[in-house]
Every structure is written in structure tokens, then in C-alpha cells.
Length: 271
Ligand SMILES: [Zn+2]
Image 1 (cartoon, rainbow, N blue to C red):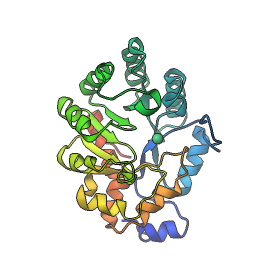
Image 2 (cartoon, rainbow, N blue to C red):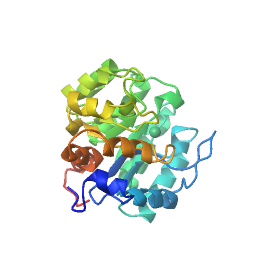
Image 3 (tube, protein in one colour):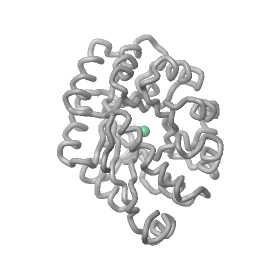
């Protein structure tokens, strides 16, 4: 608990949160069809510092769009230029099947990125397609988290989560789960210890955080903002002002993601 007051007190006074906050779902860079201000590493950090967000887990916009290689290069540079402020998702497009494993090795083993980002919606494939198998096999072998937008459906993800138990599967945009028909993921996240719900969303459904905590439990929910694609206050405020305990908010804001990162590296971190 923050010594200066509750999270609501602090945020209500415009103060940064001193407790650990990890944004598990962030991006970086320009987007093709609308303007995003302060979208580079420095701009994002200035924005994160206003709220007390310690670390952002990033997947470059260009990597969920036209080209993963420059995306992953910029991610590597951001990690290097701002130590401790970014964790990198390696953007992968499984359609370029010959490039999948070399790119994973270059980024995970070479640059020290911590996970994988898939965007089957923009890259137009199914996460159950055989072309994704090398991604899952590599991720399972290296105990990597994978964030995807999103997983076709809960049945497909259940199969994957059972087949690849060492992967931590992150379900993007779960805060608006009932708006996009993803309610089956609630049951799945409750049952499978390698499935987590990330609350990044441009749609704020009243009472949905409370519902997720009640049905899934705070241990399986992680904070994400979609920064800089979406500005921080929406999801941040939804969580700060949710009618749940302070302890649960801190788990969602950072402690759960810290555990995921520690499990991935098999060691504990002072974050
Ligand atoms: Zn996103």
C-alpha cells in the first residue's frame, strides 16, 4: 500500500503511483491511419512517468503491421537506451516461415527480449494454423510469454495452452471481453495456470474489472494500456477506480507481470 494514501488518493491528486506498475501491453512508433503524439521511447517514458508506470512491455506498431525486422531493431534500441524501462516482445509474422526461427533467435537470444507478440488480425492468419507451430515450439522450449490479439477463440487457446504448458498465454483486450464476445476466456483463465487476461482496451465497460476479479481472481489479470496507440488514462483510471481491494489492484498493476517475467527467466528481480 502506498504510504501517501490509497491509489485513488494519489491518482486523484495527479501524483505518480510509487508501487510497481508494469504495462504488459504497449506498443511504440507511428500508426498508419491516425496521428500518435510522443510515440517514441523518450515520449513514452515521459508519459509513463506522469502516472508511475515503471516498465512497458512493447511490440512496435510497424511489427504488427508491415515489417517485423525494423520493429524488433527499434525495440532492441529502446531497451538498450533506457535500461530497465522496457521489456521487448519480439514481433513475429508466421507467414514468413523461413524467417521465424532466425528472427526469434536474433531477438530473444541476441537482444534479450522476453516474449513474443502475434497479431493474427492484422497479419491475417489463424493462431491454430500449422505455420504457427515453430513459434509455439520455440516459445515452449524457452518458456516465453506470448501476447496475441487475440487467440481465435477460447477453445483454440485451450488446446494450445494444454499442448504448450511452458508458454504463458496473454489474452489481449480482456477488459472489453464481453464487448467482443470473448467471455469463454474467463473460464479458461480460471482453469489454466498459463493463461492470463490483459486489460488493455480502448473500450471501457463499466464494472468489467470487478467482474473479472470476481470470476477469474486478481492473480490472473494483468494491466495493459495499449500505449501509445491508446492514451494511458482510460485503463489506468478504470483500474484505479475499480471497486476491488487495494491489494488486488497492485497485483494487476505489476505484481502478476513481475511473477510472469520471473518465471520466464527462472530468477527473481528487484523491479
Ligand atoms: Zn495492442
